[in-house]
Image 1 (cartoon, helix red, strand yellow):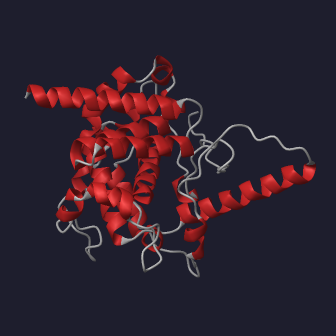
Image 2: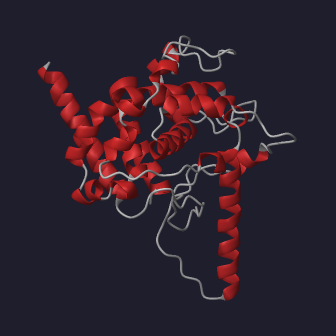
Image 3: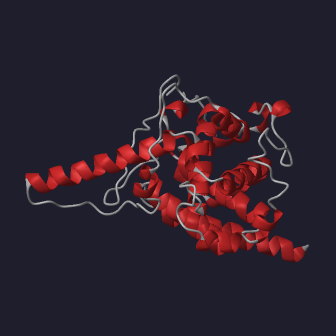
Length: 287
């Protein structure tokens, strides 16, 4: 795998299982590794220039100082907001978690600090003449999950299904590749950064915990489970650091696994996170 690109092309569909796709700007070369934590250990972070959790950018878009009230109302945020706000940008929590997951995944492949990678994407210059059609956001489906094999009786039905898959994949690719400031509201971008900061801060703590709860084949083939392990890190960090109700976080993680992973991943992730929360509660009660 050394020096090769991972297969990240989009094949998503509400009817077919699919793998996670990333914008072309995040198609990063993988590294050779034999143990999952190695390619994302703190030793590979260049934290000297990372933004702190209380630091704001020039336009204060990602400032977290004004976000305390938002954190305390995560439960409401996780269920009540519409898909897009009045500016036509994503404002649902699912969008924030999906964006955070894409950054964590790319960070794992490159061995970079996820917060710095997020800032890099935020500050990337647009190509000359680039325009983004916001109507695509209304067509994008955060709840498009994989499903059982679809049987068709005619070539026409097969071709129609294929066209639907290709259309959905094209919309997904365009949305995920667009500059984040054009796609996500300021609230979502702040929440995304909070998630990434939490993941970064808790990574070394959660690695041994994850190694205890995941099945042996995930440990033996970490290169094939980067996405699944990223979902675990994301959910565990939100539960531990942001105080979102664990039921909401677990449901969101399972939905992300249904959308972007294959096979038994949703069931396994559900079990791992419930075990994690039970152990966390037991530890807190002992204290």
